[in-house]
Length: 232
Image 1: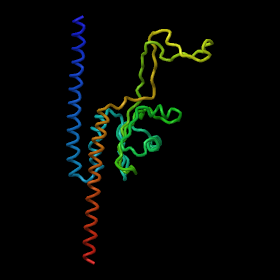
Image 2 (image 1 turned 90 degrees about the vertical axis):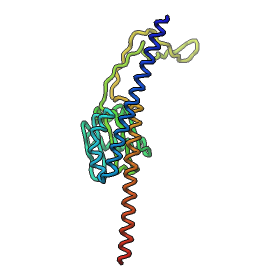
Image 3 (image 1 turned 30 degrees about the horizontal axis):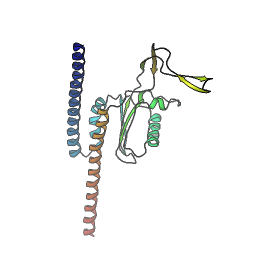
Image 4 (image 1 turned 45 degrees about the vertical axis):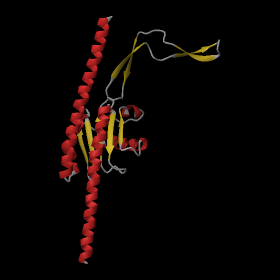
């Protein structure tokens, strides 16, 4: 008994230590990217070039198979991304499902679109951040479908039968607990807490930079107008 208790406590403590180390490692990774991104955004006027430089890091840190960066001038693609038709459909669906939120994620887009004859296996998982309501600037991450096998102790479906005694349908419990397998399609790896934290931080940093540059442009235009008025 004491040995079992010791082994259980050891395993639990080991798990907690591993989780803590992983959290610290992830926090350090986010911090390093934040500092580098902030520095480049502050000194470089081209947001497109900066996002291009960070595209590989953005994909890797979120375990994405594809990435799309949308700007007012162009759409830049990296890795395995959906076709123009599917991308247009994705933008429309997200706008309908979440018109206000600037951060959006799903791990089962293929399942949601299973009744449509479009190829979505390379975008079952989608994460999107936008920086304005018109979506002039936005970034999309894509994850491929992962086919998983779930194993249950018996078929989880409860059988409904009609009871003459109660004159009603009743649900019967599982009649056996043999291993029951279920294959899950049209879903990607779920977005973790770490993924969501990263999305929020990147969104905040880039949006602050866009707003700062808009303010600088506004102030510059006001100065030019003032100078022109003086010349007149």
